[in-house]
Length: 623
Ligand code: ADP
Ligand code: MG
Picture 1 (cartoon, rainbow, N blue to C red):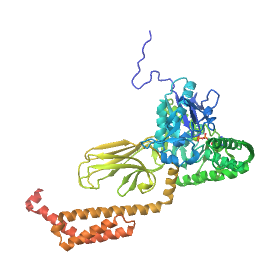
Picture 2: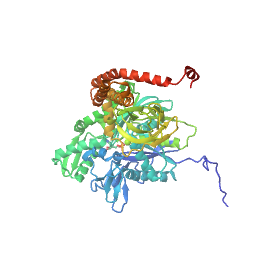
Picture 3: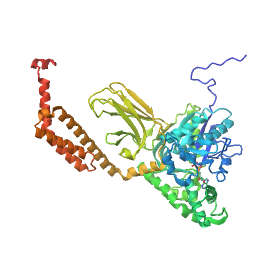
Picture 4: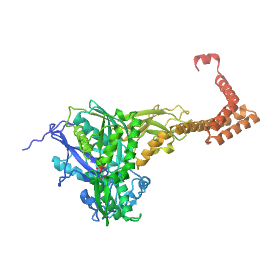
């Protein structure tokens, strides 16, 4: 007879058994998985001893999917059913995807709810989340075979630039595979984890991650086991794919092809470009044979072609340094991440820009997955004696819409997460019982320049005079960078909350643009804010004056005085949408002068009213 083992609540039946955890780098181009085995993180191999899994999913009419190299090989023969660079679609709306342009040969179907569009394939509509889940499934089963059992959890990496929607979509993909997500970890932070623990490095390091579809640069401070991200930046529409396009374009020109290429010829050119590019990391020239054209591409020519792209990455590096208030010479180490950092010109120019040779000891393809594996091992509880603090930051500020269409930042960008922040707001009108909360992300002052994330309403506020209710709005960003917003009226305790799940996220170009614009338009924004505030003041004054006229105007004013003030109201009405700060402030001043006397009379009357019928004794007794 087998005795049943009963464990205490919260304790595993065999507490000393190692838990199975893995770190997954879900890349735009390639994905891979790593795990800590016998104390060392290592990448896990497939049956053919390959560690990279091309992030490509092909669907057939039987609704079966093929993932990885087999699918990659079908990219040019079956372009519509073979999905690549799906990561670029994660958490995006159709408008954002359209901006990616003709690079995407897929047919997309838009959903009614304005969410992420689907790919139209022979197997039916497939969402980017589902396609990503197919990739994850392969990696999860690879890990389970290697580790000999069900996974207890995974750490998934995402670009530091990913906004709420993109993070949420990534988490959703994992949910579809049934695996538990221990943490979403920023890719550069994962790379720092791999290097920090391997070498016990201290100081300030720059992580230069040039992959297939994205470029990320992060500045991290490493000291006594604490990783703090000081600033992040980059361009998530810039990667090896763009290098391939530049080279393919050159092939096409040399071969004399027309601009209107079929999708399969386009794919073929891109594949040859990629092969040529990767070869040029080893040799100084390469022979090209594509679609009937033969030629030679030298490294020298290649360097000229891609120089603007490399310069673009260095521009991002400069900006992020400025953000962190650092100089290139403050950086103690530069870590190279991503396949594109194998390119000679990249290594050379990065070394020049930072005045030091970048670190390449850990394979730039593997470093993110290895760091994620270390973190997963820790989070799953395999190292109870070690506590590594991992601080991360949010890439764009989060805030609320306030009067006049202004964005009030609650959590500023580059704030370390997890974090909770609250701010008190009040009602604008007497007797107001509801308030709408509009959550935004972005750097600019006007809401029209920021991205709307969610709206919700707080109802049941007790009717009080304007300004008396105290509404506390709290923003909570968890360690995965996901946002939760709640609003509470403090006197009554009425509460409302929302987990912010936008239907689609920020376009990566938008993020870069929003950041850039905020640098360039700080002064403009200040003026715009001042103008909006002035407009709000004018409107408020008009409302107050109108209400007062209605209430006591006839009683306290002569007919002439009354019509004068009516004119003042009309003037304010005309002016409150004016775009001229001076015009509005001038009018406000005039209006307050014109209504001074009326205000004084009203004050007298109300004091008299308050005193009427009370004897002095009453007043002293407080009746
Ligand atoms: P991602 O993180 O976007 O999935 P990776 O880090 O796997 O991307 O990088 C993929 C990119 O690296 C591709 O554009 C690929 O062509 C490029 N790459 C891989 N090996 C080399 C090489 N030896 N030289 C230049 N580029 C390379
Ligand atoms: Mg990567």
